Every structure is written in structure tokens, then in C-alpha cells.
Amino acid sequence: MQTIKNSLIMALAGTVLTACGGSGDSSDTLQPEPPESTLPTTLSVNVSDAPVDDALAVVVEFDSVELVGTGNPIVIDVRDEQDNPKQVDLLQFQGADFDSLLEDVEVPAGTYEQFRLNVTENSYIELEQGTFALRVPSGQLKLDGFTLAEEQQATFTVEFDLRKALVDPPGRAEVQLKPRGVRLVQNDLTGAIEGSVAQSLVLAEVCLDKTDVNKGNAVYIYQGHTHELSNLGDDTDEAADESEVSPYTIGEVDFDDEQGYRFEVAYLPAGEYTVGFTCLALNDVPESDEGAEQGFEIQAKLEVVLSAEQTVTVDFE
Image (cartoon, rainbow, N blue to C red; front, side, top):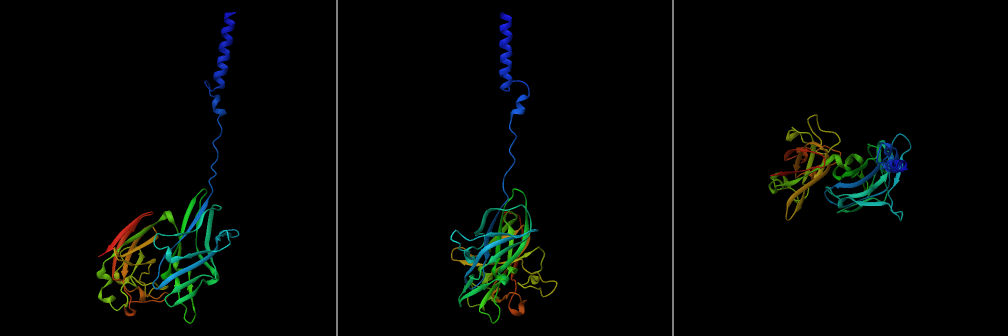
């Protein structure tokens, strides 16, 4: 009887240990499968600006954006809860500052050939001479596209280089905003260049014909190194000759009572750049070529190497 009792106790103990995973490998089959990832692909889009002389406000009104891929365009409404379009005064968001247009919107992963901004007719520009309509040809700014991977949380910035984008058509009481000065960049692939300019460059002899020494000061950003100073050209659709280099973008040099003359150009793709300073940017007319004879030249240059998510500081002395 004692032997039978011991056998029963041992059998029961083994059953309990097995059920609790205390012996053997049967516990593996009881563990749940890890859940599959369900992170969505999201898109955020910000708006920033490289400013222009004489403008007091540059207000662009958006009602939607479009992602153009292989199928029908994906239209994303950017109006608020009261059905008001999104208005952005670009002059309030300069350098690395930005306003949000889209925030973590879920979209299908894939390749989109174009990103389009739909701009309303309520856009306007305020100048010292008055307020004028700001027109976008066809009502759309058509920018380069991008590829979104599965589960990617991507953030892009629409950078408005107003010195390049704003055009004043002769004989028309309006200003046109063209896509030639607007670019779409992926934030985590870009960096910024900031710095200062010595007062001696701003007050150089070539600058003294200006009525206001604090206007028309700008840095021209050229891609690449080893450019001759004389080959650094103005902002034009077509260079004067094969040796002239056109700027990738342009940034204003602002005067501050405490810090002097400073600039910041953000959202630049990583790479090599030549930064040129001029006090004669007022003489650079969009869509036409100006050189020394027309009162434009780059006075000094510096070379930088920019990495993604980095800010490089340079000083013109």
C-alpha cells in the first residue's frame, strides 16, 4: 500500500510540473506568437522660407496637397475644422523655423512622382508700394516626388526661396510665385549653414551707392567646391556661359544691433557647398543675367562640407 501511494504522489507531481512548464519542451507550444508590426506609413510636411528684400508679408493660402503616383492622385485636404484654407505668411518662418502643413498623415507606402501644392487665389504679397495679388500659374506648385517605405515616418519641408520664386510681370498689377524657387527636401537628409559677415564687407566701396546699407546683403549657396570667385553667378534661368555657376539657393543677411550681420540657410541636402557673399543682391533680377556691368558680383567666398542633421558655422571676415 505504501508503494502504491508513493507512485501516485510521484505521478501527480510530474503532471503538475509538466503543466507548469517545469520539465520538457512542451511550454514552447503554449507561448503566443509575437504580433506583427502595425506601424503605419506617415507623412508630415512643413513650410519654411528664405526671404526677399522689400516684402512686408508673403501670404500663401493652401487648400490641399496631392501625391501623384501610378494610380489616381491622393488628395489631402489641409483646411481646418471650420473649412478655412491654411494660410502661411512665409516671412514669419525663416531659416530653420517652419509652419506645419501636414502632421503624421497616414498614406500608402510607395513611390510618388510628384508632390503638388494647391494654392488659392486669396494669396497675396504686401510690399512697401502696396498689397498685390500673388498668383501661381495653374494654381499648383508641382514639386519633385519621393519614395516612402513601409512603416516610415517621414518629414519633409517645402522651402520657399522667395528671391528666386517671386517674379513681377511687366504691366501686370500682380506678383507671380513660380516653382523655380521652391523645393521639397527630406528633413533627416539635410543640414544648415549659418554665420556672420564683417561690417567691412557690407560697407565696401562697391556697396556705397545703396540708399540703405542693410538691404541687398545676401549669401549665395553654390553646390560643389573649387569654383573661381569670378565664376559665381547670379540667379538666372540660363548662365551667361559655361564657366558661370548658378546658385542652388540664396539667403538674406540680416542686421542685429547685438550680433551684427548674420545669416542662416537651412534644409540643405548634405554635400559640398561654396558660400558667396554679396552686398549687391538688390541688382540681381530674377530670370535675367546680371554681371559686374549690371552691378552684381560676389565679393567673397568660403567652402563648407555639410552632413545631414548638422549645422555648420562660417564667418566672412
